[in-house]
Image (cartoon, rainbow, N blue to C red; front, side):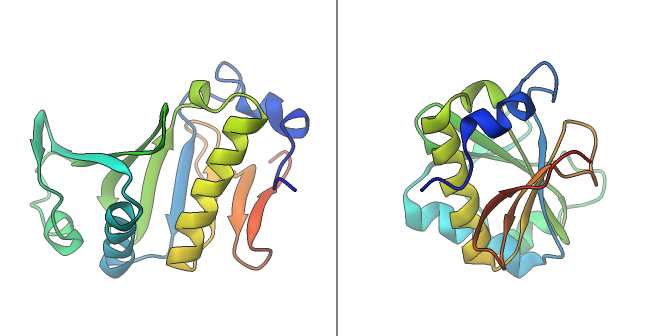
Length: 158
C-alpha cells in the first residue's frame, strides 16, 4: 500500500501552482546529522556530485563543509536516488538539512512512490521528520515523513 495516492495529492505536485522546486527540510539536526546523510548517500550507492561553485570535488566530511568561512559560496550536493529524480542539498546551516526536488520529475503514482521511499529512507536513517513546503513558503508544510507514523503523510492545506 503506498504512503500517498497520486489522485489525493496531485494538485500539490503541480509545478506551476506549488512551484517547481518545493522546499524540503529536516530541522533540528547537527553536523552529525549531515554526516549521517552523506554516509547514507554513499551506502545506498546513489549517484551524486558535490560542488563548490562550478567545481566538482570529492564528497567531504560534513564538519568540514559546515566550517567554511561565512563569505564562502554555498556548496551543493546533487543526489539522484532514482533515475530522473534529483535532490539538491544546500549546506546553509548546521541545524537544518535543506534541499530541493523538481516536481516535474515527480509526476504520477510510480514517481510519487519513489519520492516517498526516498523521504522514508532519509527520515528513518536520521530519525527525524522530513517536511515539504511549497516553494518559498518555508514553515508551511503540506507533506512530511512522520517519524511516529513511519510513513509519508499529507498534512493538508496550510
